[in-house]
View 1 (tube, one colour):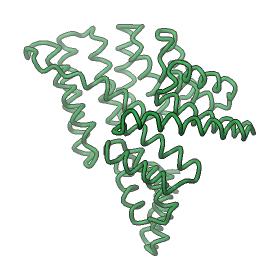
View 2 (spheres, rainbow, N blue to C red):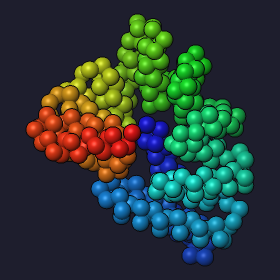
View 3 (tube, rainbow, N blue to C red):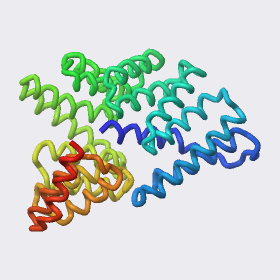
View 4 (cartoon, one colour):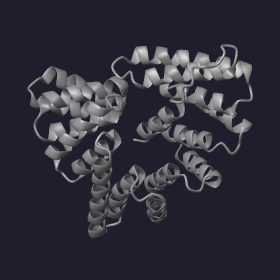
Length: 316
């Protein structure tokens, strides 16, 4: 899940296009790289094309670095492009270079934490989130992901404290809503069912407020859909997640959770199509392959279902 929200930060950091710089300046090549990244983030249907566009972005950022080798920003943006291509070694190398140049670059520290998280280095990710918060104590997304990593390690009390801090910083933000959702999960694990239900209700209320303020907030619709899935309200979840993918087709995780809702309501053909969109971007996601197998089996497409189950087993 962290990849989806890292992607949102990646997009924010690469949408700053100026386009009025001379070609022999670092700013010009940063701008060119940003334009390529923006194009890539909007390309969800063809992953080969998306990676080619990201390769162009990397080349532009490298030209910026040749002109200004001590640009922390250029190294960070190069790291983001590598990360989006799935080249995590180069991404980590580049983000570390960004931090060497500017040790208090909170964006670089945060992205480093995300890269560690995506590659399963949980303790390293937690340390990097702590370093981010030393530089920027009010960074709400760092508090949220710190809490999530603590929860994944079984440190439930510390996780609850971090979720609470997230909510305190901005009670109406998406990170606060997700914190209520995640608090609900943690409280269930701790056997505190009544508190878990209250937290889930607070999450739903926060998502609804966000949608009321901005009906075109794909992230809020996504959160609402996931919240409804967790409550077993799959018909309503499918409606919310349909809206999310309409608003942001490139937000691939929404396609997966949409498929969960569709599968649960017997809409198997739609579930398969939704999973195909997700698996194009995440071909190693074993749960998605299993869900696709379940949907195909329900449709009587047994050979295809068996192939999907084999892919699920292969991915572990």
